[in-house]
Amino acid sequence: MRVIIYTGKGGVGKTSVAAATALRAAAKGHRTVIISTDAAHSLSDSLEFQLSGKVTQIAKNLDGIEVDIQYELENRWKEIQAYLSDFLASQGMDAVTAKEMAVFPGMELMSALFYIEEFHKEKRYDVVVMDTAPTADTLRLLAFPDTANWYFDRLFHMLRNVIRVARATVGKFMSTPLPTDKFLKDIESLKERLAYVKDLLSDPEVTSVRLVINPEKMVISETQRAYTYLCLYGYTVESVIVNRVVPEDYAGQYFDIKLQEQRKYMAAIDEAFSPLKMLKANLMPREVLGRKALDKLADEIFGDGDPTEVYSRESPMGMYDEDGASVLALKLPFPMNQKLELYTRKDDLMVQLGAFKKSITLPHSMTNKKILGAAMDDGWLRIRFEGEEHGKGKARKRGRGRTAPRKTS
Ligand SMILES: Nc1ncnc2c1ncn2[C@@H]1O[C@H](COP(=O)(O)OP(=O)(O)OP(=O)(O)O)[C@@H](O)[C@H]1O
Ligand SMILES: [Mg+2]
Image (cartoon, rainbow, N blue to C red):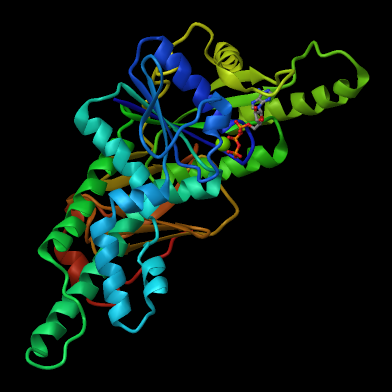
């Protein structure tokens, strides 16, 4: 199963390009489903076909769904939400607020990811096309499998306390509801399911992220940042779709200025995103609505090609040995002005770039090893760890304090 995720700044044409891709994939005979994770669902408008929170057939080989949090709450999260709201109410919160609060952060994001998991397990589709919300929200969605673990660990901790307190107060007044076995099992399976999705999303054979942009400075800048973060999270960014390109044969002085500006930005795009595969679509004379218009958009972008082709399989992370050191290489395509901090914590390497943080679980060969240094070269951040022969003993002998976070610039 292929998963193709379209992301980009607001209004660049993500929904249109995703819908065009899904229609074309279905026409080529792939069993296709398009999922919208944008709460401001405009996929129905684009396709001129009313979708809902349930999988609905749009055309031959093509289904669609607009993830709907209300529907998800009633179907997927009932048990968990019911317990959490009882729990919060038992702590003195009024019932309505407790119910609202029991919608924990990320439930809707997780629902979208679970569709991917389910479709993969059921072998129901050949292609999943994702139409996402503008960049910031989508980065949250894609970082979710990482951050969710943190949340679940906290939740488990809290529940363990509830059970401990309950045992200590046997026979006394006890108003806190105890989590049922089913509830605890549900929570536990969430972690496993997220790990399953994470594996799919970080497999370049399965998942490709495609950046949709326009030849405009603000769009290019925002998307460059997103590109770096996506690499940090371990996604394979595989291509760029430059949408709304003004055709060079546009007549008239007004558009001459636009064309001049555009040439400058097309050169900037080449510089910024090469060697990513680049696909283009012209600015259409009319809004792109309905299947006929979307089909035309697909012609522009893919020609006769198959939109499900994997354009790149390069993983944004690699590990190798060099001159006695173990090297972890992370693709960070843009040397950015923000401070980059690296430090190790237990078995994890923490990479912090501006407000974004990523933890990478290190392989055994790199745990308990000192970071010797890090350097950017050719779009890759290469972090060098003390190699095997320097041995664990040596690192330990330095004692406490010396293993504290070590910063590299
Ligand atoms: N190549 C194009 N030529 C002309 N109009 C286009 C083109 N691509 C998209 N549009 C139009 O631009 C508008 C925005 O497109 P779309 O909804 O696909 O963008 P989006 O990136 O999904 O927006 P949002 O960030 O709000 O989800 C729509 O009215 C769409 O029909
Ligand atoms: Mg959209």
